[in-house]
Amino acid sequence: MSSCIYFLNCISRTGKCEGHSPPRLSAKTTSFSVRHKNISIRWALPFDISPPPIEHDHIEDIETPVENQIDAVTNAVSVVDLSHYGRIRVSGEDRVHFLHNQSTANFECLTEGQGCDTAFVTATARTIDLAHAWIMKNAILLVVSPEMAENITRMLQKYIFFADKVEIQDITKQTSLFVVIGPKSNKLMDDLNLGDMVGQPYGSHKHYTVNGMPLTVAVGNVISEEGFSLLTTPDASASVWNALLNQGVIPMDSDAWEMLRILQGRPAPAKELTDEFNVLEAGLWNAVSLNKGCYKGQETIARLVTYDGVKQNLWGIDLSSHAKPGSPITVDGKKVGKLTSFTDGTKTSGPFGLGYIKRKAASRGGSVIVGENVIGTLVQVPFLKRQNPPP
Image (cartoon, rainbow, N blue to C red; front, side, top):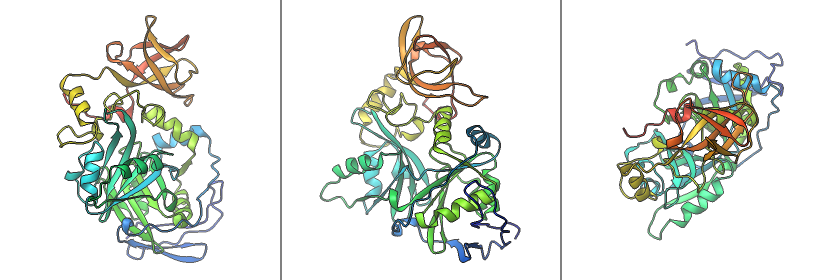
């Protein structure tokens, strides 16, 4: 077999190879060397069997310019460490029914190895967070936004009744999460002998082991249906990270990731996902089931759909200059919305923001004023463009 896996720890903190040559190994053995230790990767029992203890934090100093990091997402492949995102493990016999009732997605139609997006909302469908879910053999893993794991864990535990067979664990510190994204992501998977994941549906995932430690690889990530997510242990994270860099993957830092989030149009808690806006105004149609039974926020969502009650929408905004989040958005001197996120962008994109704008005042290519005198042009953004509202 021609594809080989090179999990070799020969990358310096600058991302440059220090001169070691990775061994060529067949997909049958898929062994690799890390600091002279023999490591093997093979099919594994699901990651959800027993979360391992944290050994160390994975830290990498990234010196690649932000412009190059964003460019890799468009023209090559980039990797970002999202270990600061929360991971929640929901287990027990009633876990599927429980999450089916406590969030917006239809969990009862999913089977092991599949995944979905789901939103956590208030009783009036105001947004709390957007989660990425993987259906595993013994548990459901939820990937939630940074600093949201504790709040969502506490919220879910509050709704576990005496007879419910459900357990909820925050396993953020016991796991590490990497995301690879860019048009060369599929080739990367092939080169790492993980090509069986290429072409699988969004949220699909499989389990492997790295030196006896679990590695879960999933299709898509929290920002895009393209690319892949890699869930592993802190003890194995450096090996996985360096293997990706050894394949020429461009590392991305948190500043570049936040820029990408805004350019992609992915809403975030405390910015686009707040108690000011409901889940449909946030444009999260793909995370909402309009056909399943009773769940938290359902009545409000049903009324919004039935009576066409969505009064504002989230838009991308090309801006003429710097603007401050929270600034009012006006048309003809009348306030029609609010800017929620801003980035200086790249040389290609320029200043860019996200903001909620009243439906009657918004159209693609329309002009708005942000703050005192910043000119904005409304554009569709990739994350929201993929959403599928009912006709």
